[in-house]
Structures are given as structure tokens and as C-alpha cells.
Image 1 (spheres, rainbow, N blue to C red):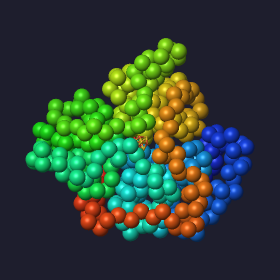
Image 2 (cartoon, protein in one colour):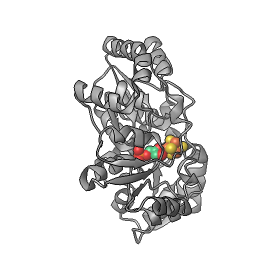
Image 3 (spheres, rainbow, N blue to C red):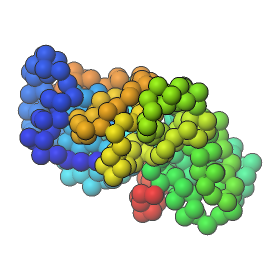
Image 4 (cartoon, rainbow, N blue to C red):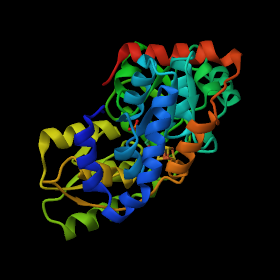
Length: 325
Ligand code: 13P
Ligand code: SF4
């Protein structure tokens, strides 16, 4: 979660990206830097972005919560979200005066696609009086039907902040299951899953451990329960980085989207990373070319229906008031 000094950023770019690739990308990187100055723009990049974007053009990197917090306080004229649609919508909801661009508008998320606003209304009818917590990996329309949002960094804290015996928690059944194991509050879950994290298995991790004695396994809570049971630490993508900084394990497997290991390896040259690789196809839709095009033409702007803006913002602001877990 950082805005780094230019020399540190250059060092990390050199560590993360082979020289030939860096040289080939240099004209685009320079063009983007010039456009950012011209447009008074910032690029916020999720931890899953490719290393050239993460180290080469981002002004700020982090998990969903950190990007939302940064977007809310940004004074830039233009915010470019190097991430997926729900992240760009969140930025727009939290700072509606800014122009928010998503370089590839079709960059979605299997969790956000798993539930609609009408589904939330139906859940409320089935469970009258039960508050609704929605993961930020949802559309603005779903957020507008929710009492409060959460991210993987604060889900337990948000659920417990409500003081209710029963909570509707949507849409990630695995994150919901993980929270359920840590609280006495009864959770009503939805059947959504992340198409990237659901592919990991406990058997795969046991195989990794047997090939790498002493391996420290860090998993994202969107993984299935048998994966989380094998993990030494479970946390959001930023929680993973903070844990590495504290624990400094010698050899690590990050059980999450695989660009994350490439990005953080440049920050922790003393840690060896074992890289089981599942890529998020939605995150991969963001490229240097479409970041340049978005900035040059101010295109792919996030525009949300007026009717959802106020209630969706309220659900996000309630989450920000509770903070990180
Ligand atoms: P984080 O909030 O932990 O960065 O997770 C976002 C995400 O999409 C994970 O798949
Ligand atoms: Fe959505 Fe999964 Fe991709 Fe994250 S990794 S954006 S949860 S599909």
C-alpha cells in the first residue's frame, strides 16, 4: 500500500521486469507519465496488476480497501483504475467529482457477476430485518441494496460491528465460510465464488509442502476451506504483504493471483517465492496500451445511475468508518 519514491520504483521495476521487456515498454511508460502530468491524473493499481503496470505506472498500489481509501481522498482531476470494474465503481462512488477511468470497461469479476440487486431484494424478503453485508466485489446496484460493504481486509470486523445475531453476507461463499468460523453470528451466505481462487485445492498445497520443506503458505480468504486449513496465514492481498514484512519467512507460496508474487518479490529480494500460478483474466485486460489510450482520449469513464449513487456510497462510507480489520 504505497506511493513510492521514484528511485525505489525504478529499482523494483528493474527487479521485476527483464531488461529487454523494460526497454521495449519505455516509450509507452514515458507517454503515460507525460499524459498523467498533462491530465493531473493518478493511476491506482491493484496488487494483481502485471509488474510493468504495478511498478512502472502506478502512483499508488494496494488491496481493494487501500484503493478505496486512496480514491476517497484523491484530489487528482482524473483517477485511472488499473483493476476491475467494481474497484473503479467504488472509486467513483467515493469521490464522484473526479473523472474515473477504467481502461478496459469489460474487466469484470466472477463474484460481482454472481449476484444482482434483485437477488439482494429477494434475500431481504426471505430474511426480514436481517442486515446485509456485501463484499466490495459487487456492482454498484448490489451495494445500493446493502447496509454496509466489506473487503477481505475487514470482513469479520464489519460483520461484528453490526451487533446483530444474524447477517446476510454476500456473495462469496468461501469468504463467508471463513468469517463464519471466527464468529458466533449466524451468516446467511450466497453461492458466489472467485473463479481464480476456487481452483486451488488443499491437496495441491500438501503436494507443494512435501516438495518444499519449511514452506510458509499464505492464502487469500476467497480460497476454499480445505486450502485455508493448510495455510499458515490468511489475509487480504495487502495483509499478505504486511505479513511478509513482519514474519520474513525464507520461502513462501502466495495462494492467490500469480502476478502478486512477481510484484512483491521485487520488494522482498531475500524471500524465495514458490509460484503456483492462477491468473485473473479480468485483471489481465488492463494493459499499458489501454491505460495510455484512456488517458489520451479520456475514455472508458465510469458513469453510474444517479439512483444508486447515494445508497451505494453510504454502504461504502459505513465500511470506511469501521476501517481495516
Ligand atoms: P483484496 O481486497 O484482498 O486485494 O482482494 C481483491 C480481489 O479481487 C481478490 O481476488
Ligand atoms: Fe474477481 Fe477473482 Fe479476479 Fe479478484 S481474482 S477480480 S475476485 S475474479
